[in-house]
Image (cartoon, rainbow, N blue to C red; front, side, top):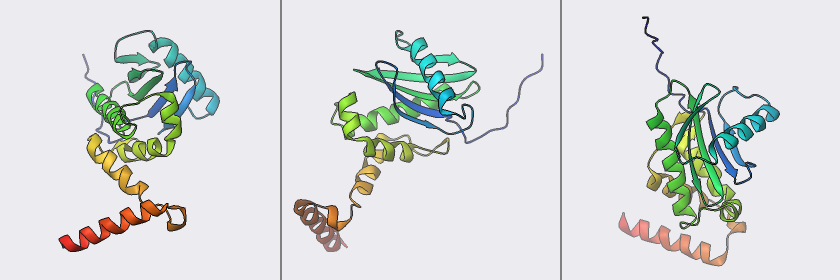
Length: 177
């Protein structure tokens, strides 16, 4: 029996998806060309939703891919990797994403709250995975970095209270130095 030896790769994640309870796409980020067209991506998303939305398990093998998933109220979160990928690594990404969003949305992880805070979702996903490479698995770090990036709003778009808060923080840091 010949053992299959794969070269190690940092490119762990093939896609991150968030679907609503009808199987419609709310967020999708594909990191390779397994499904190059939007039509193929949507067909895959419908297939994955149909196979997973009625089950209580957390992992599935589908179309030669490893899929870890989690549901919350009216959302389904998916992290997809190759069939040779370590499920625990994919689950760490899923858990980090879900916990980060839970903190950012104040434990209100539902469709309406997510749609109102899509910019935070985009920033969080970019902090966790870049080009399929896992960068972060600690939700506290992700939330902190997203909050810091959210503070970089141009002065003309800030409210008076945001400007005052920013000034207070700058004074505090200068006194601590």
